[in-house]
Length: 134
Ligand SMILES: [Zn+2]
Ligand SMILES: [Zn+2]
Image (cartoon, rainbow, N blue to C red; front, side, top):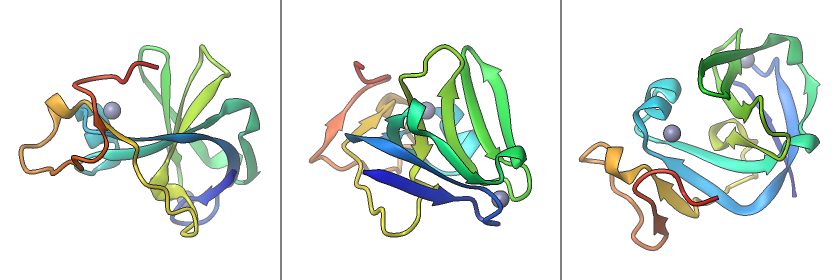
């Protein structure tokens, strides 16, 4: 499936083909800070299929962690995607950036050991203490 998304100000829009069934809630403190939320929901997609329809020049990359880049719109601050300098295999896209018709449901919760005490996780999906094995 080709996912399509845009940032809040709509100056950046993009598309990418998903990796089916890989939609993770990440509760780690880095994702919480970066997204400004209690946890971040990310869908994995094939890096080679990532295409910017417009606004790529506005994409900012935060390079603060080993190998991983967290990107956001330099105009409105919306978090858009994370990718690595080291792999072209996959990237993760913030579900919050996707157009509303992509109502993707999480398939796992990650870093549940780090979550806020009040965050409820869905008992019906997989849970991992830290990174999932992939
Ligand atoms: Zn924007
Ligand atoms: Zn995280």
